[in-house]
Image 1: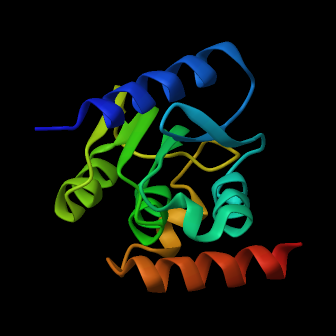
Image 2: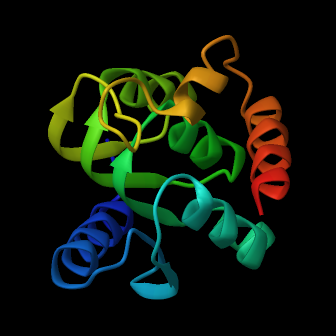
Length: 146
């Protein structure tokens, strides 16, 4: 059974994502800890870096949840995840970690910017199920891009 506080935080995340142009929101006990805009994996990584241990026990709202984002949620020890769109792979990652998740729409995969293939971050993590390894890979890649 999912605790009511987590359900309430998921509802709050849904409200924020549907009424603003944010791509990530972190909610804990009804309070918004941070909101981020942007594309790709950058907003969730920024939120994790900014909040550190404060992500533990929070709920993350993510506009689009793929395996990369889901592994970062597990890495951050969140208590719940809400996403407007999510892949089956992402939901499976949450289920294996025992993290309740809600999505409005299941999608087959996250597309790359040119919309003709798989998101590069999803490709990058196809061979790992380790949240710690995913965090290291994504952080290193993002630092190299910037």
